[in-house]
Structures are given as structure tokens and as C-alpha cells.
Image 1 (spheres, rainbow, N blue to C red):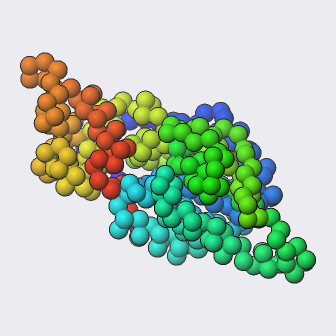
Image 2 (image 1 turned 90 degrees about the horizontal axis):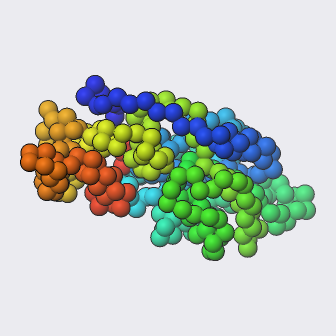
Image 3 (image 1 turned 90 degrees about the vertical axis):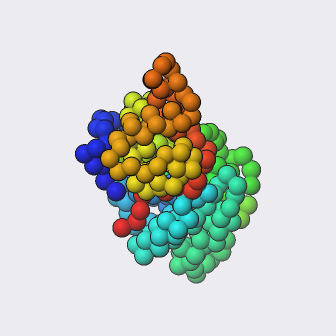
Length: 291
């Protein structure tokens, strides 16, 4: 789905200086790893995938982790898994917070590195440590995933963008070392849609947008993709002629968010909508479809 004319237009650029340093660090360390593992948000696999990663990690075996699958539409996630697999990546679907699917990661590592492991053994290097670089945009659950794989609190995790700032080697008990890297974004988003999806899923701070505009456009996406969720949660009936702000105001009215006589608190409703989406209260919702 692309942003249509009835979406409110906004401009956004997001490329803090520490992300430039992170990119340089990744480039400098690629030669020392055997495999690259990219963690994506299962709700927005394309928007959460840094387009620079393909060129940065060229020539390295690749693993794609579709994380936060507990919040994503399982039918849509299955289609993304198929699409990435057909593109040559080894895919693992996970929910790092609960640990679901994480146990499939290490077998996947040994599968994609089978030829390299065999080559090491033929050189007499049986049991040589395998080194995996873990990549991902901010707040995609990278550190939580690493901690589940390691079985201990090995990486700093937090529910806000950009917690991990420097590289960190983490040794596992089974001959595998993980390189945790800072979450990086790209210099500017290809489209308003990408920026909004990243903000809605909390990969970037929502403060970089006007929250009411962000929520209004999100309302439109939900009305097109998951109208039943809006009906069940906010008592909103599908209305193709309604603007995002109309939907936001109606939801505020239905929630009793009255500011003054005849005026409803759309800013409060905007924060409520985004928070309830983050908490999974709207159901399992994926905001991108595979081609």
C-alpha cells in the first residue's frame, strides 16, 4: 500500500551522528565474521530493513530473523517468510520477548555455514568458533533476541530507539560468538510511508512527527487493512470517505475524550491509538505485504 493523496504529508529526516559511526564500525568488522544475521520487525519487514545492508554484507551468508511475530498477522508473516526464503535467505520467525522460535536460530547458523564448517574441519580446525554479526534497526528487539540466545543478560535491552551504541562480542557456550552492533538507519527515508511505519512501530521517536498527523494516517491504514480492528476497539464503522482526522475524532468521541463542548481531544486519542497498537490491543496487525 502506498500513501495516497488523502494522507497528510509530512517531512522527516533521521540520521544521528552515532549512526554514521555505527555504519563505519560494521564495515570494519565484516571481514572478521562468518555470517550476517539481520533482525527485522515482522510487522514491517521491508520498512525495517536497512537498504544499505545488502551492499554492506555482500558475499556473506545471510540469516533473516522476523522478530515481534507475536504482534504481526501470522498469515502475512508466513508470506514474508516464503518471500525471503525464495530470495536465498535462511529465515527464522521469532518472538524474542517470550523466546518463541529463538531455539531455531543456532541450527540455522550451522545450516547456512555447513560448507564453511566442513572447510574448517578439513583444515584440522574442528570446533573452530563461528562468528555472527547481528544487525538491525533501532528497537527491533535485537538485544532481547541476543539475550534469549545467550541464555543470560548479555546485551543491554530497552523499549526505546537506539539503546545499543557500541559493538559488543558475546560468547556462547557452543562455539559461537555474536557481535552485537548499534541499530542503524539510513540517511533519509525513501518515502513518507517508511518513516511513518518506523514511527508507528517505535523504531524512531514519534516526536519527530506531529503525533495527530501520524495517528490520523495510521487510522487510514488500519481502515484499509484491518477495518475490523477499528470496529472492535473504537466502535468505528468502515467509511471510505472519512479522513484520518475524521476517524481520530470519532474514536475520541466514542472514548469520551471531550475537551470542551463539541470538541474532542484528538491529541490524547492519537497517543492512545499508538500506545494500544504497541501493546497489541488492536490484535495482530502487519502493516506491509510481501509483493
